[in-house]
Length: 510
View 1 (tube, one colour):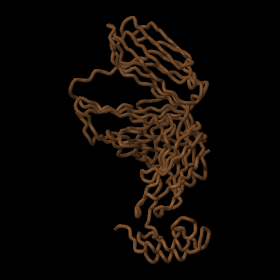
View 2 (cartoon, rainbow, N blue to C red; view 1 turned 135 degrees about the horizontal axis):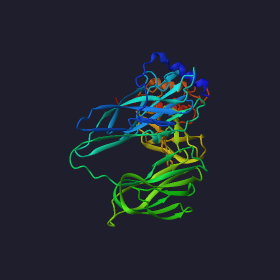
View 3 (cartoon, helix red, strand yellow; view 1 turned 90 degrees about the vertical axis):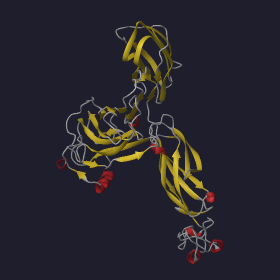
């Protein structure tokens, strides 16, 4: 069950919404129904044209969910290209709560809008059962609306495309939980935004040979389970022969079987070379009559999960040949299979003091955590501003475990009267999907003038008096003042008082 103490604490800070106060804004049925268990975006395809749309145009999307079990919370993280779109708002579809939780007491949370980097940003929204009344039973409903504003339009004859991505953050930041706080396995579906600028001849469709689905990240696919992928072709004309190689890590997955599809009622002659030990499959398909199709699976491959891990489904050395024996230009897209969550994070950074003198060491404590389900080895680096303090390697940190590291910051190269941002960063581990928590910034340390004990930016007689008052003290002594210990030897002696006097009259620049 949910931690009662934590919930009560939240209840003191948040307002418990009641369904009687709400007039749902998005009640009704979804237009693009998905079988449970699933979370998706509607509409799944947003197609705009500069004939009717310009920069500043706004549109909404709606988040939906369908669950076959009781639920107590949900959350989504929607990533988008901020050079093309800007979020101008996000809210629950039922007003003060989601339509999905319309008959449930809930804790309403404000959405978060966060920049990831120079090109991408995300919106995060969630809702939690309010510890009174029933849970949400099985069923579907809308969760949140998100409003976007068009920030850029393409030149004539071009199209801008942006995936509104919630799938890549599942199950780290996109998920639903049951009343026991266990993740509910779901299928998660993105949406595609595109804006076209008509004009000029339409570009010919690009032929693509790809692994479908492109990304299989499913913690329920444990060793001994099975899954399938298709090798699919899009927008191909007059294809007589298709040849491809697929390689993978045989320590993670193993080939079990293959099924060949008909294309335009044509059954191809099939040649194969299979090497399970090496993780290699070669297939050549020759059709009696050349085929043309907008989209068609060519083969299905069945795999067995051998061990926890991740592997690229590498589609390479591909050849498409037309009826004249000429090559068909095409692109290829690999797949990715992950049976585990790999996620390392910095969860806290703090310093032994929030202001110091030039040359006086400051301890920077960093706490890293393994949020995934595999032992991880990674590097942690501490910084002041963008300058490295130190780094250290965390070795084989178990799942759910924390590592505490203490870095000693030698402040000799700092400039008095300046404040420095303190941060830490964990290196990205292979196949890590959520990298937003790899960096943690926490506060500043001010570097003062040597002798400025009271921190007012100048050395005056009151600083001399403070040093004199602490004379003879040490940590734990009633008169101990760490700011009077100018040389950092954990005691205040006459040399500290002399250092204050030596700098008498010094000031920080105005």
